[in-house]
Image 1 (cartoon, protein in one colour):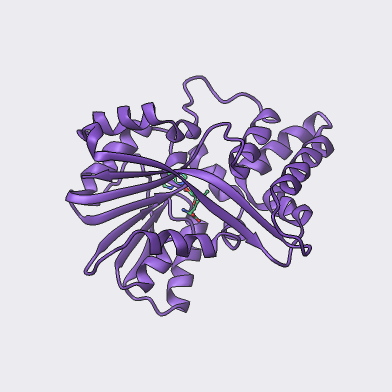
Image 2: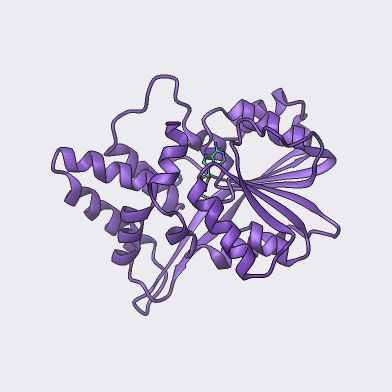
Length: 271
Ligand SMILES: C[S@@+](CC[C@H](N)C(=O)[O-])C[C@H]1O[C@@H](n2cnc3c(N)ncnc32)[C@H](O)[C@@H]1O
């Protein structure tokens, strides 16, 4: 089994994506899209950004490595009556069957960054986007003290065994030099690559920070793996304590719910 696929099929990311809907819609509004638009959402999950993009009138293909999330996305598209939104299984490292220059916009929010071969990912995104089109990525920034997700991944990694030799951390997609190098190798000069810090929010008005941590523990692959590893040496409670402390420290809600901000790097490439 491909470990990248196994990681994301292990849990049920739809439980986390439910906290991301308002920010997903805000991201799509911020793109300033004009129709007609053919869009690819890569590492789309169950459609946090793909669905609002289709609601604006774009023709959207969502590609994700996790079959359970592809199925969830297709269910959401059918429920919303969006016939121009479709989800299919695929790997961001090798977009087999997708012809060159297929899309005006390729979007990947916290998706393609998790694919194991970043140079292949950059090359594939450039290949399937038409010349003059746009690629927009949202990537977590490593060790960022202003990002709940970066800190959550950092704490989770501290409890997980070291990755195999040669593993490239997804967080390197949050570092400007790596981004310039990867897209540079794919033929994009640096003046066509923009990078700005932006903020994404996780919103759970009816759930406490403790309950939100429980969601990550039960459904979010990287955190599930950390708890599995922690269970082997009795450090589960310590991991839980650190994550709850983190969630409390980021929480902006004052009425018992959870509202947490996470800084990310927004990368825009003019193809
Ligand atoms: C943190 S989730 C984000 C999902 C979605 N973009 C959202 O914002 O809700 C990461 C997603 O990337 C997908 N993913 C990871 N590796 C991938 C790969 N190699 N190719 C395609 N999708 C991948 C996962 O299955 C998962 O749906």
